[in-house]
Image (cartoon, rainbow, N blue to C red; front, side):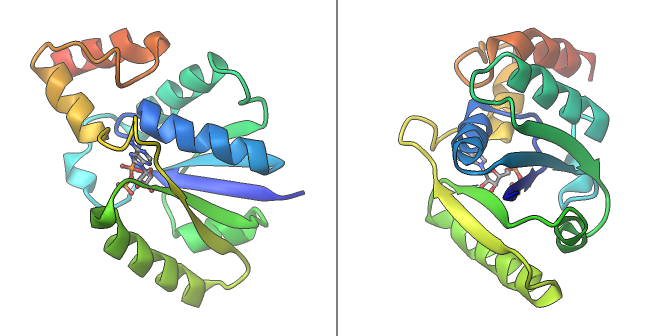
Length: 165
Ligand code: ADP
């Protein structure tokens, strides 16, 4: 069975992430969306890891072509997780050149730690390439309409949570 892991902070998940996940689910037998609980920018996370996982679960339940997608939370090294799950690939979305250097460095590091999987990059669609979690947080915190950026089923959850802060 070919398993792909799509890791990230997902603080919160956006339509951009979900598009990459859906396209990955088309190609692989199983996709694990992995919320990296201690993943960089830790102190700036607005949503807890469990909240982020719940928003992802709710989103994928509402979408087609996601029957082979699971959500998990992890605090350790991505390479260890991929090895443990026998993953074939780590799949990441690339929006622009600005994503590239950091992603490339991570891919090479993971390759050194464990060479049993490939890191693959999927190009963002033109429609979603401007989308980011921070944009959703900024617009939401200021009371703006985030319905073009996240699935309808989670838009209110996100707005309510951002209002609480
Ligand atoms: P990170 O902390 O690595 O930036 P994110 O949760 O922001 O984690 O993103 C996870 C992955 O999704 C990264 O590979 C990122 O480049 C990709 N991604 C984020 N937003 C988009 C988007 N709008 N379109 C395609 N890929 C995206």
